[in-house]
Amino acid sequence: MSDGMGGGRPGPGALIFDVDGTLAETEELHRAAFNAAFAAHGLGWHWDRPTYGALLAVTGGKERIRAYRDRHAFALPRETDIAGLHADKTRRYGRMVAEGALCARPGVLSLVAEARGHGLRLAVATTTSPDNVEALCRALWQRPAGEIFDVIAAGDEVGAKKPAPDVYLLALARLGIAGEAALAFEDSAVGLASARAAGLKVVACPSLYMSGDDFAGAWWLTPSLDGAWRHIAASF
Ligand SMILES: [Mg+2]
Image (cartoon, rainbow, N blue to C red; front, side, top):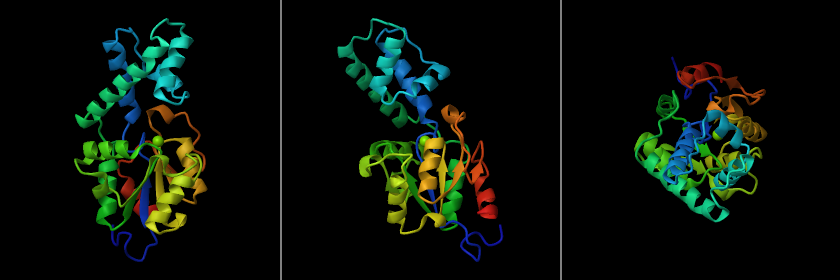
């Protein structure tokens, strides 16, 4: 690359990343944590990928447990035990993240490094909690989130979650740039809609569970971010 994007070419000034499904396949770890908790509680349940994929339509972990129990007319867990079972799952998930069970999706680490090296600013726009962002960054980069991303817009900082544009608009405001100056990275149609509504071009890189989504309107639809910097530098 001759000039990078700091030269005459009007490349993006910032990259803004979704977290769950985009930086890492977090749902697979959630699924593993659910299954470990089920085994520890002697339920005899195992959620395979198709089962969990269908359950993702139910929002919330406790709600997913309840929906599965009711769908199959299982007697257990009792209603009063669901919160405890889910708390156990959450502890297991946190431990797994801390132990390094998550790895970055292909291309993510090099894309972040290349963009940083070319002087772009980096941000996160996610509806997951700031704690989860922190845990994930420590797992992926062995560094605090604030050392990887200049701006973090996360959790309940905005009123309307994706697909509303709010969290992207917040990230843009904190970066001090307009939507056209940034490029978003998303793994789902809901995230794509959010970023587009905020005026961003979007790289859509579908995650395992979102591969059936409709990604029409993406600036670039790719199965992997491996080598993404070259494409972005040449095409933005
Ligand atoms: Mg996502």
